[in-house]
Length: 412
Image 1 (cartoon, rainbow, N blue to C red):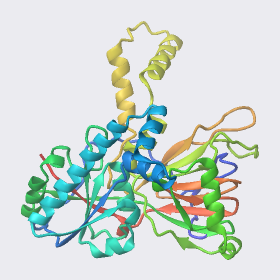
Image 2 (image 1 turned 180 degrees about the horizontal axis):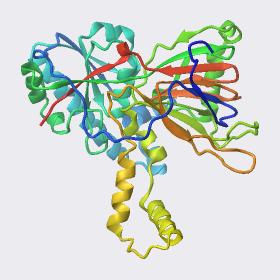
Image 3 (image 1 turned 45 degrees about the vertical axis):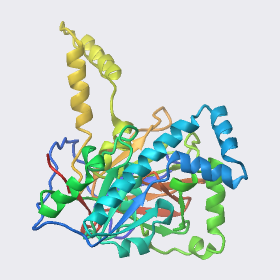
């Protein structure tokens, strides 16, 4: 492929997917600090879109009401599944109360507010707003960020249910109930901008289909997912048979994952490597799924250290403090800064035996190109948007200066 000279091929067996890294991987590094630049003046937007998540209560209610069932039927069906109707309603009310607190605070400052459900959130909403507030958890923040294509439009996350959501990408939890204080600090300029790096995807080849499926709203099963992709391809056969290059209208803040729809499905393709998928993440995403793919447990570290001690004939105690420190240091090295301009790729669950060899399983790159040899594969962006990615499709994942996401850091 053009523009990829000087790169290095790494083979993996995601049904003979091929990976190309634009630069040689560098060692893991930890980044405790976050680079952020101070604002030149206070920030007070005139128009703000507040994008709210769909609560579990709303999801279940809509699903059962659509089937013609009553609210009482819903209570009984949830009880049969082991779910609590009153518990779901309580979490829903907590979320909606915190959303109303944010909206009321904004309007008291004379800011025009537009509240939209995540299913109504589109490019028109992004164009209208001077800034966007994600009202939910990290999943809602990822969805909101995916449609903001300009680094000049700030995005702020508010965790509307801190007891049930971690909210790494949101403001500190205290501002959920003290949002006027956050607005005042923004107005006075008592914050810092943080430009989080994001990835973009170019699709090309004879197997591409740039029509996406929204996994956030549909909660699709494997069968539904396959059906949705088949439906989306009708009337677009030209895009599947003619090689074109398309920049997807979405940006990834966390990670892009490529794998078979059924991850346990493997196919023998010598001499390719065999695995269950490929993850490519940003510094922001290095704390999320990528971290959990690559982290070590204390049990694994203790067993490895014990073997090493035995092999080297060392007579030394292997206490819990040593095991914990080694584990923590290794796992912390997997995390890097949100403003880092590199990608980090991980081959998930590679199979190594006399038939399949193992190349480097993870590392850094400036650009990653993947050629599909799959029959029923998907490329999933930030866990919420899925694109068909089968034999003949080529995805090039990279970063661009204009794709950075502008977020705020309210320092203590």
